[in-house]
Image (cartoon, rainbow, N blue to C red; front, side, top):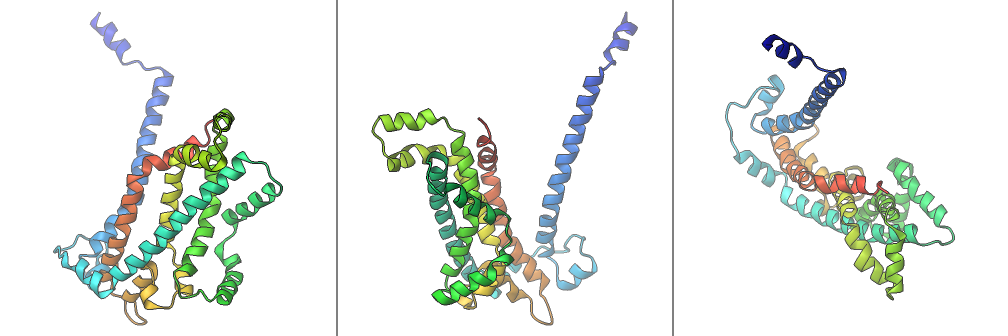
Length: 289
């Protein structure tokens, strides 16, 4: 009787075996993804505690001593504080403009029929597929004519324009998934377009707005090309361009560079970690009918 129970207890159906294999593969895939994401960050942070010679000789070894004063030195030597303020102003203004204009445009495209809407939506689609190099020359000429180069506006305007394409498409898809009866009932109660936008659209768009905000913050905070080309005034430079201060024509101070990179990278990782659920919700809820 005991042999019969043991013989049948170890028997597994093919479906169970396939499920357990799928679980193991899924766990392995997740661990691999986490490793590929975090190992470079850990290596960057550890390199901040090693001098240039140790970084070049044994790049993957552990530091022999942990001197946290290197972060204060990097902050002062590179002027990270000033660059961080400029990045925060540009990123904050860009994010606010993208959320406001993107939500308004998405509401218009999702709930109103007007002439030229298809063409305008197609133009916004180009913003998702065209690289910045394809229109940089024309944009540069426009900014020269407007005399806004070497101002924060020279970064806020293109960053906002680049962020609007994704914002409009994502928020429009989310609004289209909502029942039309919700808006019709509000109109029956006497609500106008502006009241519907403030009282109904914005509260329901919170997951989508959080997703757009995270993507916009990450893109604006890390953008390098336009910040390098449009801003020559040292007092207006942002963090990605400011980090060039640690590298000269003949030598690069890798220890201070890695310390500065760690300080400017950790806040962005923290932002994404805090809003990870909202990002996932914003990307999935809009596709649910």
